[in-house]
Structures are given as C-alpha cells and as structure tokens.
Length: 191
Image (cartoon, rainbow, N blue to C red):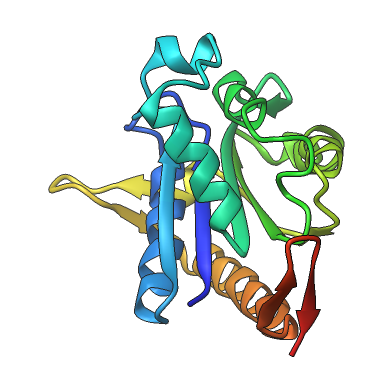
C-alpha cells in the first residue's frame, strides 16, 4: 500500500495551512492511500528543539518519513522563508531520508510576493536530504482560505483546482514507480 507522510511546519493549529492539508488528506484518504500526519504543532517542543532522538514522538516522525513513498511538506511562509518549526523537523530526517521519495511542497503566505520561497528555500534542503523528485507544488495566499464558524475551512474554487492538479501530478509520479521486492540487504530489484 502506498504511504504518504505529511510534514506540517505550522507552529499553531489555527493556521489556514491546515485547510490546505485537510483538503489533500481527505482526497488521498478517499483514494486509499495510507497517511501519516506529522505536525510541528503536535510535537513536544522540547523534544523537537533539542532534537531528542530518544523521544518516542521523534522516533515516530523518523519512522513515518522512512516508510513513506511520498512526502508532502507544508509550511506557512514567514519573512520570505518556510517556518523555523518546519526546519527543526527537517533537521531530524537522516541525510538521505528523502531519497527515492516523491516530494510535494505546499506553502501559504500573506501575499504572492513570497512565491519563490519554495524554490529558493525548500528545494535546496530537500535536495540535501537526497530528494530528487520534487514536484512543482502549490503556493497559496491566506485570502484564498476562510475559516468557517463551525470549524473547518472554505477554499476558493481556483485554489481547489490547483490542489487537485497537484494531487494528479503526485498520483502520476507515484504510479511511475514499480512495486519492488527485496533482493538482498544491499539493494532492491524491480519486479
């Protein structure tokens, strides 16, 4: 079964970023993907900041990324870059931890002016972690997402279309990979 890990770098649960991640998570769940959701807002701050690799929560983060076929990296943009909370999570991932995984960036900011935060901020870090299959992703502006009074979010039609396009690109890339069976401890052989 195909596994997808969400890494969400918002330090607060009230962020509109969760409207985007919830939209994608719902669709991926309906399509039958197994999802692991990693949120900076839910991790113990001390374990995260101290990079406590003995913490059960940190071990769970590393295991979720290791098992994933694809990783959706989501962050608000602050001062033209992704959040420091996201950086602390990415620092926990082993050096080649994104090798062989499809990576989909998902960013949100106050204006379109910070659109290049994905290209100039995130992509070099993903590459340093061994990621080579980095999709175009989605950059959204706060005004395109509204919080609903009873909870949840409303997303503009144009943004929903862009998110659906990103999901289609993700599914296409995942389908390109042939299921593999282990040959030995040193490598894998395509079936």
